[in-house]
Amino acid sequence: MSNSELKVTPSQTIGPFFRFGMDWIATEQLVEEGHPNAIVVHGVVYDGGGNPVPDAMIEVFQADENGKFPPECAGSWSGFARRLTDDNGGYEIRTIKPGAVVAANGELQAPHIAVVVFARGLLKPAFSRIYFSDEAEANSKDPLLNVIDDPKAKNTLIAVSESGGKYRFDVRLQDSDLGPETQFIQFGV
Amino acid sequence: MGSILGQPLESVDPPYHFPGYQSTGLRGPNRNPLIIRPGDTELHAPVFGESRIGPNDNDLTAQHQGQPIGEKIIVSGRLLDSRGKPIANQLIEIWQANSAGRYAHKLDDHDAPLDPNFTGGGRTLTDSNGVYRFTTIKPAAYPWGNHPNAWRPAHIHFSLFGTAFDQRLITQMYFPGDPTMDSDPIANSIRDKKVLARLISDFDWDLTISGIALGYRWDIVLGGPNPTPEAK
Ligand SMILES: [Fe+3]
Image (cartoon, rainbow over all chains, first blue to last red; front, side, top):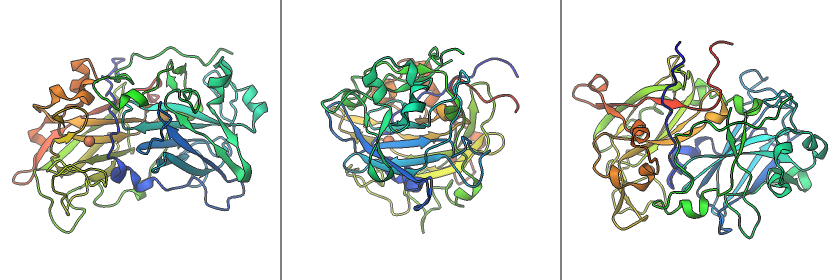
């Protein structure tokens, strides 16, 4: 095969009217209710005015408990979930904390979930990651968290542990009275 | 061991902020993204098996009792990575307005008729050569509130997965020769006309079915910093 690079297809907004096309897998959970290690990640997507965004789509992708991904992982683990935000901009996903996986530099990473946000008004996806506030030791050694100098920006990636196995992870598309913009990620070489 | 910080790839995507498209104002991120080389998580992708796809999921004209109104079309092409390697057995989802320019969505208040025989959502898996194929109805242009006399050119929304999560893409396929294209701020948020042209399908006689359907061909190339390895 030649090294010539094909012309990559550009992004367009998901628009406002995606619900009926995207909802067929939008209620699936990553683990069943009652799973011994089940956690719930939930939050709200906000715009730069501090308004909830009711027409956003959030997708997550993560390793299983052993740090494995499909198709290598056991059972029917898809690693993937999709949510369409509700009228109040909210979303909620039942999953488990993933096992450790390695970064591009070979170092082990703290448990994390890849997340991508689409919305009317977003002309391209906004990628980020969800880490966990009760993994302080692992987080302190994470190669991605450690290249973020601004502690406020770093905090936007860390879901806050609540009671009952719940974690709060809000997405702020811009700075607002509610807090700083989520630290978004772009993938490079 | 080195840092995971990376250099950005040359981007073909529109910017987060495009003044002509009003909704970008409060929603487009303003801060600089963190540019990293993807680690394990973003180098894998979800796998959607054959069992997830129903028999009429790729034929949007066969999902109800009767035939939808409008011009029946075949939309087909290949899903490739930037090295030209087919992305096999991966999910492609589409959604669109009907032949009157109306979405089956509760918030679409465009005064055009709904079609009881057309919902406008579909999905399929690519085959081993990365080929996908949908049967549908040509969607119509529709008005929107962005600016006076704003019309979206006819388009089909496409949702795409690659072999790495960092390739996740949602975009829109347009039709050749659409007179409203030049005044559409969403399309023209892509400033380079040659890049925008990659979103315009080609009319293709080879895809037509005599007496039944016209055909449009549209190939999709997913970017991302780590195209599929040649072999595992
Ligand atoms: Fe649309």
